[in-house]
Image (cartoon, rainbow, N blue to C red; front, top):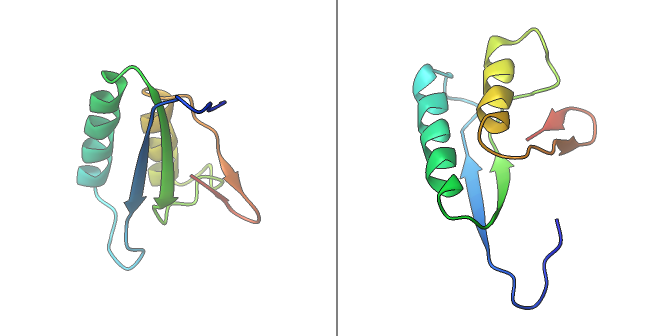
Length: 85
């Protein structure tokens, strides 16, 4: 993704406390936000700490989190030891 001087983009920052249990509400709300962002027709950068380790392919929440992103946006995973979104 390239940005020039006149580029417009949305920066979405998020945080989900790791001390709070995951539920389907988290994914429903995230999917809703992604759907709304798609209507803007501009680049979107999603960053933050969602405390979901997407490299754990057997974790149902990790799989659902990745699917929510893939269904709405071009997804790039970054990280060092654990791949974080």
